[in-house]
Image 1 (cartoon, one colour):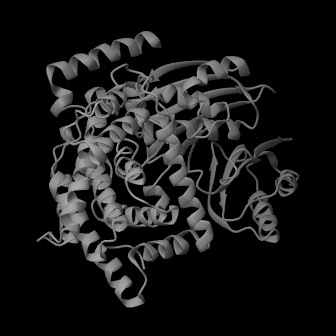
Image 2 (tube, rainbow over the protein chains, first blue to last red):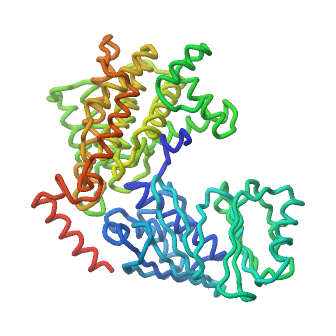
Image 3 (spheres, rainbow over the protein chains, first blue to last red):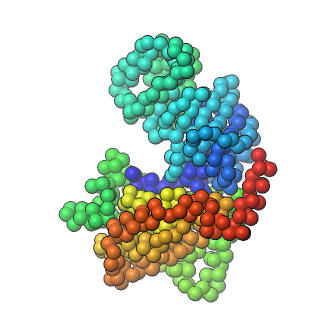
Length: 229
Length: 295
């Protein structure tokens, strides 16, 4: 446990889980979409649905989608900012099964036409967990640098990625593989201890079998991007 | 050195000759793999953010629900009229606790300490003290290390979330951190820091988390005042040489036990206590109505 988990975070109130965590969910969703979002359908579950408006959860999620960090003074005015930035959004409530009480599902469309459906929950103290991406069940927290790779489910793709990472002297902390059917589309989540440079992400994107690659950098949350083949 | 207990910090301090605060500083340097300067720079940013948060308060903003806002300014004006029973430093502590906790409820920028709901306690005792005593920035940072180290020990052994341990875990922990910081700033011994923490926690033990409509507003804002006042009295008792007969680590264990046995209605679920009064329920109904219309 870090000292600054106790004395911190510096954040917009009123709640680390319902406001700061919600902003982080919006922000990581924007980065994983890989482009500026122009449309967002947000579904709130559980405590987010019941007490979200009173906690500014809706403002924080939209603020995050606009690129704001949890301490951004514009969060209370996120709806006005969304209008300026051309982000259309709507909220409703959903009842999901077997999920954390503070869960949100975001359906996003980007300015270049990309789509992303992401489910994430706020697990306390401003920490979050992404629990589903485009229908794949996943689990990562944004506490590490994270590569999200869409690939063809075929032999050698994973070996190619990890070989290149080792040549870049990048250590894999955690990883998981997800596919809906054999030989079809698949998803790799790779959490790394070191930062990955844009040129290195681009190099990975050139490997055979890779369809798209998104990178989330834990230190500089502004710096994340997507490459599509 | 892993901050498992207050006794461990005292022992480390004794064996290395480092003061209490510096033991905590070393913990941060190890934990985050940073230099002494980097650690202190981050602590300074935290202190500055707290001061900025206090400066930003105007008393004009209201919470999203409309239930909270303006009481910090009301308290300040009352204090300025010279009518306050407490007066002086303690009167300012009350005004600052209200102001900071309201700022949190009204979506201003605050520093969670240890949680957002309890963010008013530590700044409430520190900010006014800078006006009543000559304090260097260095002394304040040392007090922050002491406070956050105490917070880590409590979080490890008892928990700091209202959902897990009730309000005692949030306001109680904030109060213990603030008491420790005050003893440090007043030149108390390591033993006095330990006694202040024990007294502060013991005196708020059992406090339930019963937020009206589940929001960080009622009674959270005013509970920041009792957390701060309790910190001042615990620090003064410890500095006077009064001891907690129950050792601090046992008090922390006891708080954890009380939290675990607390019925779920009193752990941030908004189903018991003030949240379950007729007025509390009416507030919730009204807000839920406006929630569904806002869909």
